[in-house]
Image (cartoon, rainbow, N blue to C red; front, side, top):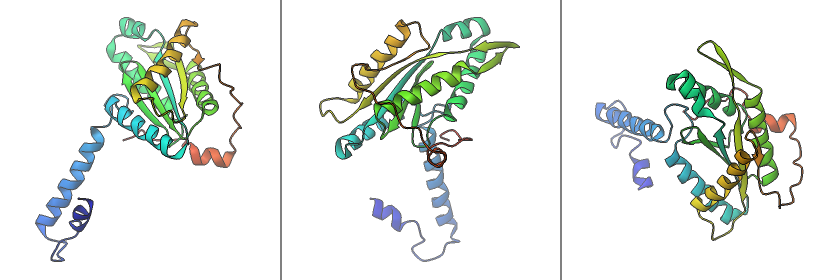
Length: 228
């Protein structure tokens, strides 16, 4: 199938100015754009739930084949319903867009930010063990806590609760089970008073090594654009 599609990239008679050939190319490009749109949450421009499940399945399979861990962060905004109730859903949507933009600037270009639903988010961290997952979650928690947004001419402070976890290749763990396991740490963070990062404290967590400036430039994009 791929070989056949590749052969169709050029006009069979060598006339690249052929109007039929140009129309085929235009339709192919339109299909590619539509496929990308089907993966994106239209509000936050994070990836959507469908793409989350597909990507997490792919990364967990990669972990089983290579041994490189897959990190997962689950996030729930604290008391976000009050924003909608007090300022209206339009203001709530503006807040979600603003939060997504902040977090995009504080994750690696290889990480996969997704909207889980409502005011819940999930970030997949390929090839990342627990210490670095925790460090990322703490950075996202702190940058939100220190930021402020104006809604209806009022300055609003927002916080979020985080669950951090890592998959290391357990063959019997499904995508749903991995999410459920991580969600338990998120619930623990909320039960501790919210605005916390929780993880499996029974694991021996070594302090992650700080990245160099060169590594940061490779892993992070300061003015990173959303997925689309």
